[in-house]
Image 1 (cartoon, rainbow, N blue to C red):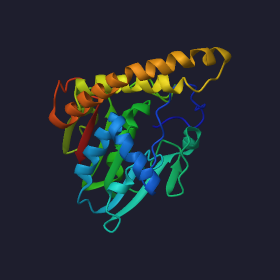
Image 2: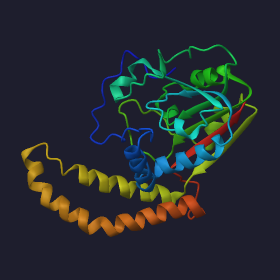
Image 3: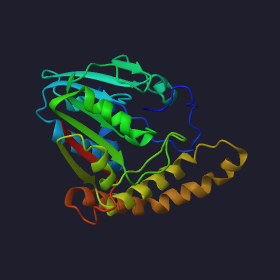
Length: 263
């Protein structure tokens, strides 16, 4: 089952992941491109999904869709899109008119309904993943394609509803019912380290928004730190993208995994 709709208070973590928005306006397209440069998690997910969804045709279910940030990768003339999310998704800032909201237990669709399923960065938030995976398998058509992404190197996020980090060994067991299960590392340890540096830098910048009187006193220190650390940020991003583009480093400690499944 997914997160309980009864026990989901709003997260109180200091630095939540930034909300995803589809690049559906000129301004959002520009910001999306900037995000792909700086947000290495999103970059690696985008690259894998773009590669796998190119040429896809049929109806597709986006499970845990949020604001449908990857819907634009689909050919609208060949694909019928359906989003589904838990009823309490609005607690995290998501409320989409194109989405069916459900209780997080049984997907409200018949067996063998969809030619494709997309599930990005959701599985780590599912307390008991086995029933959830069975539901994904149930509603996917025989021969259908399912794409699942999960983080590996990621901070404790959307607290307290962040439950798992999965190794490839566990993923193969979890998705054993599928006829095909290919697991791809997203980035390398270079990319993971670079992502941590980006997060630290961004957290420092967020501290420029004072909340208490002591925060005002720290603003000059944070500004100086941001200026001095900027060359390190650029170097980290260069190394992170080198891990993505050229495989520099080890893929035993990546940012995350993309799981490509066939029923």
